[in-house]
Structures are given as structure tokens and as C-alpha cells.
Length: 66
Image (cartoon, rainbow, N blue to C red; front, side):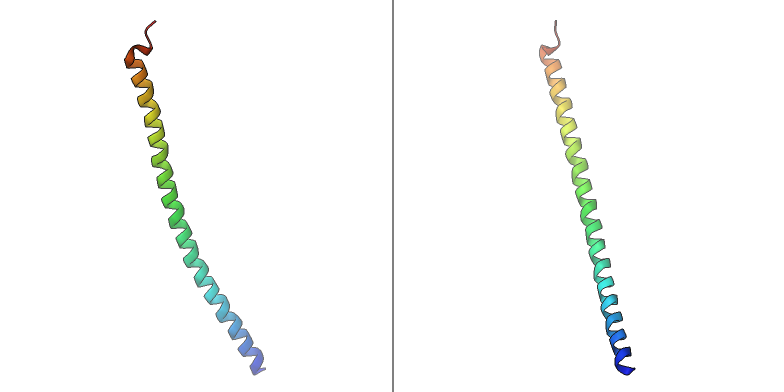
């Protein structure tokens, strides 16, 4: 019976350790995904701004004159 209890305690300790590691990993992943979302947001803004400036430059350079 004593050996069985030690086996259960060992397994429980392993599960607790694994859970703690998984929680830290999940936090890191969430932080990284947040950073990736921020970078993508600015990249989209940059692309849209560039396209807008290209259209304005074309329009101001007599590109729309008939």
C-alpha cells in the first residue's frame, strides 16, 4: 500500500509540474501572438497608406485629365 501511495504522489507531482510548464508556455504564446498581431496591423496600415499615396500622386500628376 505504501508503494502505491508513493507512485500516486510521484504521478501527481509530475502532473503539477507539467501543468505549470504548460501555463508558462501558454502565456508566452499569447504574448508572441499579440506582438504578431500588432506588427500585422502596422504592416496593413503601411500598405494601405502606400496605395493611397500612389493614387494621390497619380491624380495630382495630371493622371486624371481627359
